[in-house]
Length: 299
Length: 275
Image (cartoon, each protein chain N blue to C red):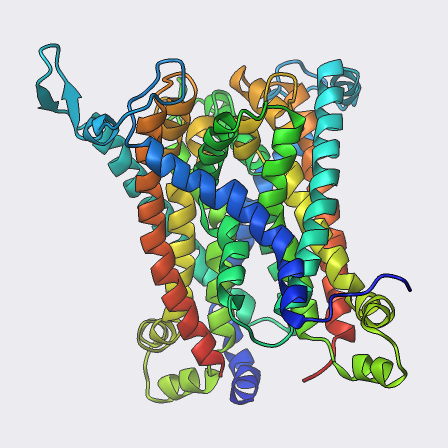
């Protein structure tokens, strides 16, 4: 053995950490900072930015510049941001309503069954989001699996137009991120002391009272963690609105992508990205607080 | 322990809520139904993708003899392989350091390594694009590879770190008592024990890379189309049996890899050292 590790533990540490930390710092932290700077620059109409300082990108969020250079309040972008928040909230609520009973069911199974069901919940998360969103076109689309039988039976005689709207986007969001709702809720339900539920039943509480007053408060950190994960990911989701929304109903990430492609307004795209990062940052902060509580429960 | 005792008695309550079982069944049908429909229609003879006529594998033959699809597959494999090897190597080095003792800068390093998990993909995508433009890096396979290494590192890192956390120091001490130097301890004691974790990390990195769409969309130049980018291009033209066939293949690749990952982590559980 000719090679030797450096004797100094500090040198050794930095050698080990350097590749990962430097790569992520240079190709992720710096670019985000650069984008923040770009949001205060004038736009170059060929893409990129021009030197100088400008607040145009940020005012564009709220105002439209008229021909005579006066600013007119224009909510078109705020509407897209608001729609993203509303759709993410709908997706999160539906995921919770669908996912909570599933987590509750899984936790009551035997160890082997639980492992298999958890694997089944996890698999979709690791498979291609694009393919999964596309598969819904076959279900919801014109002459899809839902319309075909209804048309054949004569219940409807025209397309239901299920695709390319808020409904399809919400379905896509739930489908994409529901594993991330179920897994944290499952994790906190697993820690639950089932003796407390027995106690509730012994005191003649009915099933819903038990769930509402014992189960939900005790696994609140898991629920909060799941809701934030789904909300944050839905808010930044690009695939559901562009595949199932048909690109007509934009969400924040489509608007951002549009600024860097066809619209060629990088400063405005930068400002929108900063806004998204701020929203996600707030969400992550709450997430970390919630997951600390889950950890505290484990102890 | 209390919860285990509680669970045993709660089993007696199980029968009381039959709707719960029904709900779970419906959920799993919902989760896998659309994929099943996709796979089913990929074997449909009819040109109109959603009208079943008869079983056929012709769309697979057709899709895979398409040169553009072949190139997209090759590109995806090149990117995923390079990104997996690089990110797994870097993540292993970082995990080895971060799991030993406490030192200044540990938390911030951990924070930076986890960052790609927190930042929304679209933000990473456009920031990376701006950065590449600023440093005049031409867009192509190499720009995709760099971007992929960045977000693969935390995914490779997680299972390796988990494996290290479950490892026992006794064997390393035994090695040192037998006058093995640090390199020998690393090579003959730590790495063999760590192998399942490294392998699991590499699989996660590969899955994440081969499935990536948004970041690749922004940093791929002309001619550097990966498979998800090609599928996206086809979807924009509408439903077609070729998309069904190619999507099925991509789905099965991920499924196989997740299966292997699951198998490894099951074994890890079996051999990990109890604390």
